[in-house]
Length: 444
Image (cartoon, rainbow, N blue to C red; front, side):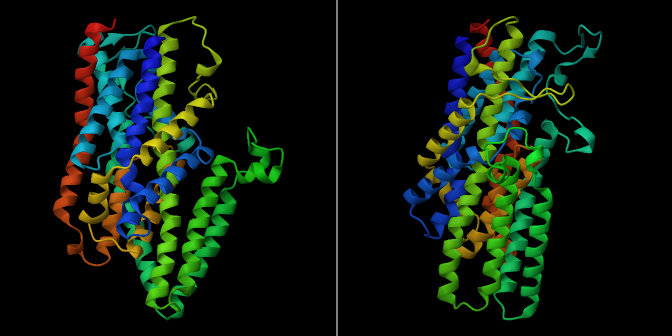
């Protein structure tokens, strides 16, 4: 039990570090454009990081918890993974490199699991109780087909989104920038497009709403408030609100003078940065929830017959067996609180990299980048894919830079960031493997 408590404490420390490491993701553009002071910006971001507690479910947490097969690992594996993730995060924060906290955690967890499998079984195959032959690399859930044709999961999907998340962010921000640029012109075409987009948005979002009869655990006695505040529905309400707000601005953009347009864009940056902070809190806090859930599951597996107190009554969901997940309320509350506290601590070296070194950012670019980043995070969270908020917002900033000209993006800085992204998972995995072997000497 002592080791389990240590892992939970270290996981929350990682969550705190994640907060100040990734604070730049949400506040870099709003600070660079002087819409908010650095102190105001971190307060703003931290508030919405914590507010995500009431918005998002636990889909990403479930994906992270199943990075490795919990029946085949021990607590030392998870401890090694968390320690390695903390070390890499602190190093990249110190160097001012906006690497991915998410991929650090995934890489650490997977690397320690592989090291454990090799230590226990070697490189040759071994036969389990069912007579099936397994190999050391199969301890990690690399790829799992989605249920009923849904989105597949596994570490390979997470690795794929190292590329896909920034590309989605870049594409979305590029398209939003083009939309805003055309809306600034006094012609009827962009207005017709905007009205059509508003109609399509309302229709799509309303069709995706979960009715009261399908809500498993209504939060309120009132049908209306239960539907409105269901985690699935809130995300789509937010998507609709963001798109409709930008659409409303586009309809009046051409009638504003330069000063009025800049003032309106700065106010919209408050909305876009809040939306991105919500996505950041919801995406990244769930990863730590997943690690804690996995730790509890491993503790139960390695201590059969143990009685767990109610505060640690965690059950991982299993779609194949029809098992619903159980997560005590203190775990998400603690995770969201830790990441919000970390965000309050800032991360100014990375703010400088994100806010000025990639491309020059104005309020116009800030709105486009943060809006695109937020929509990308909501989309991937809906698919239960743990993506990097760092990669997403970096891609979004590159996307708005491309609308000016290709040379507006400082590609030397961007290439350095991409190398950091590529190296994060393998370095974290190797570091976690080394930490695992060291810990195994002292912890049986």
